[in-house]
Each structure stands twice: as C-alpha cells, then as structure tokens.
Length: 420
Image (cartoon, rainbow, N blue to C red):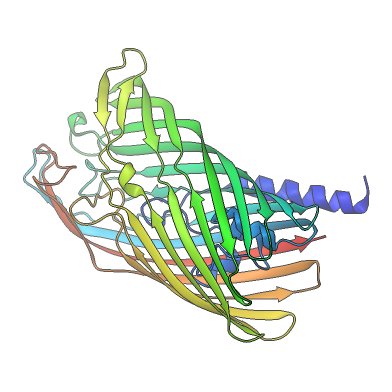
C-alpha cells in the first residue's frame, strides 16, 4: 500500500468510526442541523451551493460539482451544549400535587459527520455522506412533577447517503442519491400504577432500517451568482421493539416516517473577497402524525404516540470575507419556526421558535489541508407548557401540568478538509 493510499485509508476509517459513535441532540423538533462546521459559521446560510466544502452535499447533492479533481475527504464534529429547565405545577390528578422542577433536561452531545467525494473528470462527481440526521436526548430529574408525562427520551440515527452529480454545462448541474438510515427510539415515563415514592418506568423502544432518496440542482445564471435547490426525502421505518407498561412486557411494531425537506440556497459574489449567502428551508414535519404501536404477535393496537406537528421553516442570511489567501471569516443570522407550538408542546420535547447567531472561520494550511471552526448561540423564544383537558397528552389520572421553559444552546463545530 502506497503512502497516499495509507493516508486515505486512515482518514476514511477514522471519519467513519466517528460517525458511528454519534450521540443524539435536537434542533427543530428532533432534527439535527449540525452537519457542517463550515456552514455552522453562517447559520447555514448558503449551505446548498458549491464551493470549498463538499459538506454541502447533505442539503444539495448537486453542490458536489464544486469538488476538485480527484479525492476530497472531510471530517466534521459539533459539540452541542444545551441548557433547558422546566418549572411548573402538576395539579388535579390521582397522584397528587407537585412543583418539583425538571432540572437541566438537556445532555451535551457530540455529533460527527463524514464526507468523501471522487471526481474522475470535468462532468461527473461521486460522493457519500455519513450523518446523524435525527437525534434527541432529554433526561429530567427522576422524581420531577411531570414524571408521569415523561422521563427520559432518546432518538438516535445513522444515515449513509451515496450521491452522483453531473455537470450539464457551465450553468446547470444535477444530482441524485439514496439514503440508508438506521433509527433507534426509547421513550420513558413514570408508571402511575406502581405506587408513591419513586415509581418504576414505563418504556416504549424500537429500532430498524429504512431507505430514501436525495436530489438537487445548482444554477449559475450569471457570473458570481449561484442558486442551489436540494431535496431529502422522508424515510419510512417499521421499528421492532418492546413496550413495558404496568409491569408487563410485549413485543411491538411501530411505524414511523421521518419528514422530507426542501431547501433553496443562494450565493452572490460582491467583490473578489466578499460573498453574501442565504437559505430558506421547509421541513415536512406534519407527516409525523400519531404513530401506532401494535403487538408483534396479534397485530392489535397497544398504544399511540401523539406528535401532530406543524411543518417547520428555517431562514438564514450570512456572509464570507477572505482576509487573505489562507484565512476566511464568516458570520450569519438564522430564524427557525418550530413545528411545535403550545397547543401540542409536551414535557418530552418543549421546542419553540429560535434565533441562531453564528460566526466562524477557515484556515488553509496548504492546497491540500484546511481547517474550519464555527460557533452558534441559539436563543429560544419564551416557551410555555399547558397540558390540560384540551391537550393531546392529557391524562386525568396524572392531572393538569402548567410550566415555563427556560432554554438556550451553544454549539462549537470544527472540521478538517483534505484534498488530493
């Protein structure tokens, strides 16, 4: 094995291992946006256009047309540091009144992503991305006031996404790809039938594989202007697992369909050193309605998970400035409209609209190696939870729960890009 091949093998093996080790975190319901340290610095403005990073293939596979001849490999990692506390009062139920707070329900998470591309000629580019597109980890204090509505929640995913892009001419490029996705879910809540004190947990859990597609186009109508349109399909999963409730255990099948996503990005050259960027993203969360868990033996309905989300939207603007040939600075501002509002907001995922404030930089060590760094601070709008008789989660035996949520998130991302 030549030295170049050894380096390729080592880089790819390490990057893939990091992806498999990914931990879950949520951003906009339980989607994970942190797939690129490069675009973290712009609040993901312009993330579907071609350029220095091939990580844009996650949102628009046609952006691969910007890859250089030969091989490109990138390893991205994001440290997500959330802080979220729920403080309220449970009243009117058979289990009694409680005002014990949740404590910090957010757990820190490391989310890696890996990208590899190969360009044999001027027309064709082949690429693959390994990501964790969906994730969630929340864990309140064990005996908090709303424990009968929720204890811990965990969603974990791994997605492998091969793509092929084709340059039609200097104006148009197109691409298609497919997804192979693994999804693992575990949701726990306290068992109201197990007595006072520290009741045992009920749990629904399952995992499985599904497949989907991706597609995209880039358009360069005039010199210095680029528009990218990307699509990621939903993935249908038939999760196999178990339901533990009331002290009994049963095998289940749980049908879940993840949302599909459409995005439009733009990049505009202002000068040789300055570029403006923008993104609009729509996520079809409304297709995630009320998955039903059925018995794996009889096929009868055992329980229903109520989501009934609205669709999600994300808007961002940003810019880049080339300080010199080696150093580039970037910044961006984003606004996310959550698919969750107070009518359906649960203690398990108290999500709301949020602002993204980001900055970042890239440094080119040589024509082969570059390093990216991005930072985001997320500010969530004032958030309340109101589980009463009109709420889809309400259970008269548990009572009414009203609370305020105080949350924010800091994200630090870094990546290493290697071309040869």
